[in-house]
Image (spheres, helix red, strand yellow):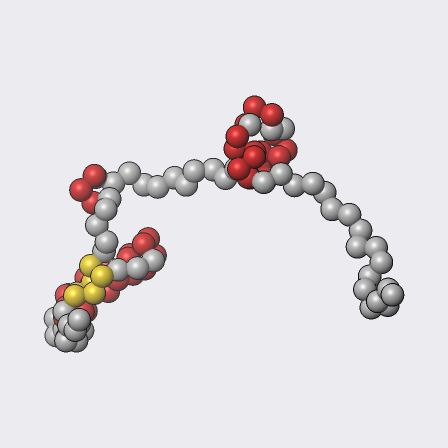
Length: 99
């Protein structure tokens, strides 16, 4: 017996090759299909090699300290870390370290 609540015609769909199959035969790909899957490499500003792998560090002792110049400098460092990296390491946060 057929269930009356089930749709009778679900329509069709276009065949979509998987990405692994596409990667295995790049010479067979038309440009229109390539543009669906390929994204341009992001261009990052050149930085010295010793600065490329360091996570930004924000010193909360200076950020919330007494010296206006220190607070302004750490606030700028915090803003740069948030805008350019999306994360940062906090030091001098005055919270006890626990395992």
